[in-house]
Length: 325
Ligand SMILES: NC(=O)c1ccc[n+]([C@@H]2O[C@H](COP(=O)([O-])OP(=O)(O)OC[C@H]3O[C@@H](n4cnc5c(N)ncnc54)[C@H](OP(=O)(O)O)[C@@H]3O)[C@@H](O)[C@H]2O)c1
Image (tube, rainbow, N blue to C red; front, top):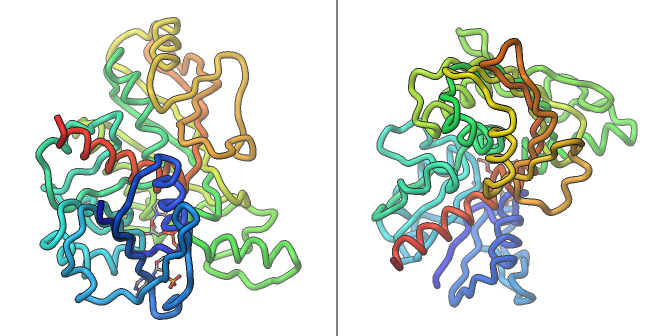
């Protein structure tokens, strides 16, 4: 198996190596790419040292079975099409291709069928979207999802390594805002990305668009408020969902308990600090919403794992499995 990771030194890239390792993926040829800054540094795959190389167009003319990108939308837009020409499947973590109609936006447990017979670029969705669509897909199947109101509580690692650095420096007394519009330590910032004419932020609009695309519900009404909080790893979301049909609480609980990639907590809840190395979407505090056709719940997921690297590796695994069938 020949694999390349672009952005290997970042939060997501490093976790991608960990997730591939955890799945015991045997790689005969592994190339790790990053910016010039990382040229020559060493990362490890199952105890084997691998030197990081500077990304160039020529690097991606080589044939790989799978190329993982986690280096931002700009790099993906320039280099992923080159990789897609030469290699079988390119899995991109950025927002660069998610809105393109012909590019599948995949959470394997929800719409992994899109990978059957597909080669080219696959988009990995936004981190907060991945964790909420998993339980929402289960509930949609039961009751018909109609409308969604979500507030997120997103950790600083969601902004990449620089987000963690900003929070850690501020905790030591720095008053440098770093990459954020305000101090994040001991604070809450209701802005992720720039604001658009709609009044929503870029992150909020991503969640609107991506929820509809992944759930295949183009008419779904969605309103999201995304908020940065001083947590290092783990995004949380408060979700209010309205349905076409009456909700049966026992049926909802049973289906969530049975679903893969979901951990359901009937009588307790989880916080980001409790997540550990989990790749699951943790769903708790399920209760009726405003009426018998609505539900509210709390959801927590590791943004770097479930929200990025682990989902990318699940895409890889499902693509291989479908190909072998
Ligand atoms: N963090 C999350 O929770 C999360 C979740 C979902 C999706 N994503 C997406 O995943 C991507 C990576 O995020 P991250 O959190 O891993 O960010 P990060 O920690 O800032 O890492 C960025 C990576 O991109 C590389 N890079 C930067 N400029 C480059 C260049 N000119 N050429 C080649 N490589 C370059 C960096 O290499 P150097 O180390 O050499 O600078 C580093 O490996 C982003 O698109 C992000 O939106 C992140």
